[in-house]
Image (cartoon, rainbow, N blue to C red; front, side):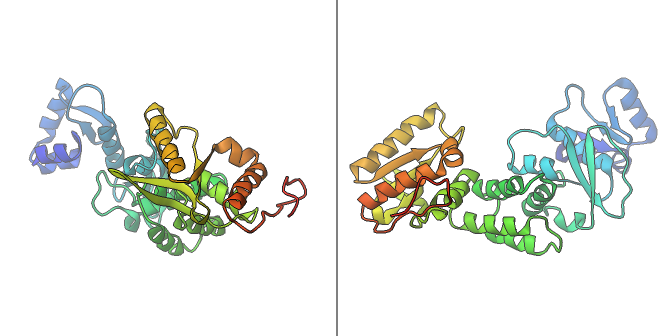
Length: 312
């Protein structure tokens, strides 16, 4: 029985689990004195020697935090694949009726939703993806950061717009509700990154460009491509390259995609974050020129006094 617990919990057990498996207090003390086991927190032991792997560290923290504890916020995001690197501080949410015992390197949160927010199957105990996203949006310092969590969760296909909509609706109090609702609509329209949302809002909508298809599927031999922004009626594609979107192994793929576009009569325009953030008006004017050459009969509109677009 103890072997099963150790396997499930990456070699970390509580004193209660050890006693329930048949070990005596003396047997536990003997293992600790001999160095076969070591104390991580009060009543929580590692049953192995050597470095403490991340999974064992997380199990130790959640077990030491006691009844109803679940990993949450950045730590739950780490486990779900919402962030790529382990956060330095481990976040744990406890039921609101619990008292908090401080643990080094651990930040505790109290919530009346700790039980319902727990993922039904994932171990160690952690919040569901939707609740994790909500927690992160509410701890964000500004609205754009909160929106970024929504976009990232959907862009990485960890959840859906519908699920997040339901989760947000279930919370009576929600900071930046309007911003988050708008972000969900933009994601539903096909935006998979903050860069794509900024393009949609600051370049396309603000300057009256026609509505494009987003993440449009284009068939190719042996598979398919996804175009960031495709003005299908005007045979024009806009590709938005993030700061680390194109490592060496992707450059050849992008060149092949662009060449295939030209071969099929499609024009491809490629922009980066510095373009979308620094010169959205110039981008809109340039794209509008291409679209009009391809048959668009509309005109871009000025977004304000400083806009380079002055009218028809």
